[in-house]
Image 1 (cartoon, helix red, strand yellow):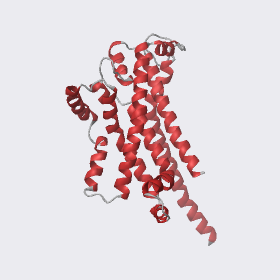
Image 2 (cartoon, rainbow, N blue to C red; image 1 turned 45 degrees about the vertical axis):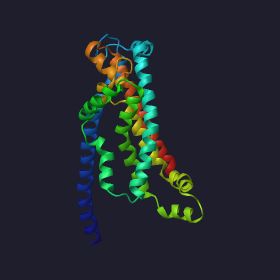
Image 3 (cartoon, rainbow, N blue to C red; image 1 turned 120 degrees about the vertical axis):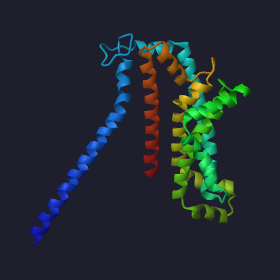
Image 4 (cartoon, helix red, strand yellow; image 1 turned 135 degrees about the vertical axis):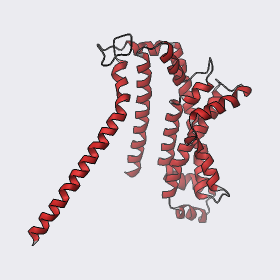
Amino acid sequence: MSETIVLSQTRLFRPLVLGKLAAGAVVGLILFFLVLPTLIVIPISFGSAPYIEFPPSGLTLKWYGEFFSDHDWMAATFFSLRIAFFTTISATIIGTLAAVALVRGDLPGKSLVLGLALSPLIVPHIIMALALYLFFTPLRLTGTFFGFLLAHTMLTVPYVVIAVSASLQRFDPILEMAALNCGASRGRAFFEIVLPQIIPGVVTGAVFAFVSSFDEATVAFFISGIEGKTITRKLFEDIDFNLTPVIAVVSTIIVSTSIFLMGTIRWAQIRTKS
C-alpha cells in the first residue's frame, strides 16, 4: 500500500518538476532576448574599426580615450550627472514626504492626489516633453539647469512614492505611537523611529530617481539647449551625424552605471535583512 502511494506521488512530482524547468527555461530565454541588445554594445565599444561593427574585428581602448578627451562629451556627461544628483535629492525629499502623507495621513481626495503623483508613469513622455517645452520656452528655462531639475524631479518623484509607500505599508505604526506617547515630537519620532525602518525604500526610490534622470532621453531632447545638453541628447545627435564606436562607449557607461546602482539596491536590502 505504501509503495503504491509513493509511486503515485512520484508520478505526480515528475510533471511538476518538468513544468517548472520548462517555465524557467522560457523565462530565461525571454530575459536573455531582452538583455542581449544591451550586452552587445559592450564588445562594440572595444572594436578597432572606425564604425559600428559586431563582432569586432579587433580590440582597442581608442574610443574610450576619445570619449574622455572630448570636451563636448565630458560637458554633457557632467551636466547629466549634476542634474541626476540634485534631482535625486529633490525627488527623494518630495517623494518621501508625499508617501508619508498618502499612507499615514487622512487627506481628502487621497486617490486623486495619488493619481496625480503617479501620472508621469502613465502619461507618454513625448506628450510631457512637448508640454514642458511649450511651458519652459516663454520662461527661458530650456537648456538650463533649473529647468532640467524641475522636469526630472516631476518625472522621478513617482518612483520614490511607490518605493517608500511599500516600506511604510510594512512598518508597524504602533512603534511611532509609542514614541509619541513617550513625549517625542512628530519630527523626532519620524527621524528616529520611522525613517530608519523605511530607509531601504528611500534608498531604492533614490536610486531609481538617479537612474531615470541620468538616462532620460525624450524630455531632454525637447528642453535641451545649445549649452545645456545632457548625455542622452548628445547621444542622439552623434547617432545622426557622427556614428562611431564612441556611441557604444557612452551606451556601455550608461548601462554600467545602471547595473552598479541596481547592485547598490540589492546590497542595501541584504544589509537590512542581516
